Amino acid sequence: MEMEKLVSLCRRRGFLFQSSEIYGGLNGFWDYGPLGVELKRNLKDAWWRDMVSAHDDLDTLAGAPSPYEMVGLDCTIIMHPQVWKNSGHHDLFVDEMVDCRESKKRYRYDQVLGRWASCDGKKSQGPPKQLSGPTFDVKGAEYDKIFVTSIGEEPESEIERRAMKHFKLRAKDADKLSWDGPAVTLDKINVADFDKTLGPDATGLGTLTEPRDFNLMFPTTIGALAGEEGRAFLRPETAQGIFVNFKNVIDSTRVRVPVGIAQVGKSFRNEITPRNFTFRSREFEQMEIEFFCHPDESRKWYEYWRNRRMAWWQEMGLAGDRLILRDHHADELSHYSTGTADIEYAFPFLPEGEYGELEGIAHRGDFDLRSHMEGKLDPNSCPLTVQLGEDGKPLHRGSGKDLTYRDEVTNERFTPHVIEPSAGADRGALAILCEAYTEDTAPDDKGKEQTRLSMKFHPRIAPIKAAVFPLVKKDGMPEVAKDLYRALKKKFPAFYDEKGAVGRRYRRQDEVGTPYCITVDGQTLDDKTVTLRDRDSLEQVRIRLDDAVEEIERRVTGD
Ligand code: GAP
Figure 1 (cartoon, rainbow, N blue to C red):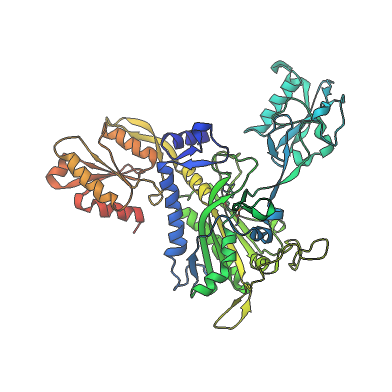
Figure 2: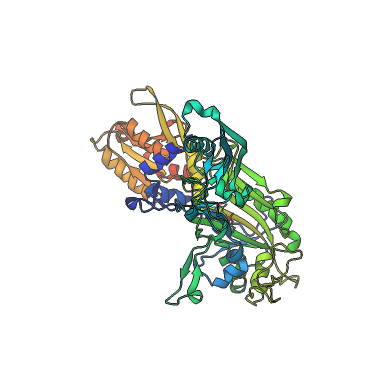
């Protein structure tokens, strides 16, 4: 499936729009249209129901080491600034970036791809003095070999195009261009070579600044306080709200460890290069669980959540081989973690064989609770110790609150270990849209096979569950159809359509992924039966009009 086709369908049928589109849009921000909002809500509702509200805490679920409890939270987006100091986000949640002095654009250092090129002895003019950075006083310099970069969709062919343009070569002279080595990202070359670098949107050499850290948190100001005092941040993850409320939840409820605390909500990251539709956005929603357990049991719980979460995405309709579970290599793990796995999807905008993360399941040990108790821990030290400044004093003070847990039965006191399944609702919705997009054939009104576009959503996730059509707009059919539509609407989103040929009405519903269409026809008036048509099998069966609501409900819920 080509991504452009899906993007166009999403806009045309009201799944997704660019934010502030009438003003030219805002990069990295997306609005969900009437169908998109239902789709994403269905995904979040399914997650909440399956993970939290319908969780059976009395029984040991398949694969689980023991019964466990699940509760929810809804925390604020702006939290005490100290939270981000002790979570590590204040100092470590950074991307290295470079700015272009000519185009005024900013790029992620590790995302700019480039290749060394030269052209038949031609010299390239170095940067003019006013553009050269503090390290480059190279006015008048000339180079035999330059590093040509791109950040576009097909960077390698773009690099070639830009090199041809730079050396003023026509297509027939392409063989005059020589390459030194394969394409590599900008962070792999020496900063001193930036004066020989042609930035992704620049016309001259040497316009890129040295890389510097860029914190991804959006700063904001609380009240009328100016300066550091009023400075706060929009949360970059929902997880921290759960850690700082751990004690509140334990003290205010009767839940006992092992327990999972869940939250769904918006997170914000000032991504330097938002891209690939909603995949990397600056405002997005997360569905996170922090699962607190006894340290001795944590490995077993990690295994449980890793498998449970993979099975859940499959149940949501990502059942094909585009979904994979990838365990991180031991050298990718923080030393306090005994495991991290990513659930990844082969999004069509990625090169063949590459996958994008939908959810991460991480074993976080006691890192987070201890950091909030004692002050920011050094993630690189083993055993974990509080980070000290140059003056030997703790870099950031902790809350000083006791976040340990005492087991009422065994009387043992310990700092629980945490397993964190952290999923993205927008990436989930995007994967479901990609997986659902299907081009096949179906007979039209005259029985002739025609190509059709259908969104094969799992019925639980489909924005509209059923559509009702009167075959014709007369003989009392619309009245019967409208009554059925109203009865369905009391249970879930349904759609009524009496316009155009019935085949065309089916197509319209296929395109928005409605799994069932019910047609009221002449026979309905005689024997009180209707036709129920299945979107995927195209099978049509006659069912009793009085059973229609129950039948749709049964099919949607799978009960
Ligand atoms: N608390 C852990 C945490 O936030 P993460 O891997 O940074 O971990 C978890 O984020 C999930 O949030 C990702 O797997 C992804 O689905 C989603 N996510 C992260 N950054 C995103 C972005 N810029 N746009 C859309 N979704 C994003």
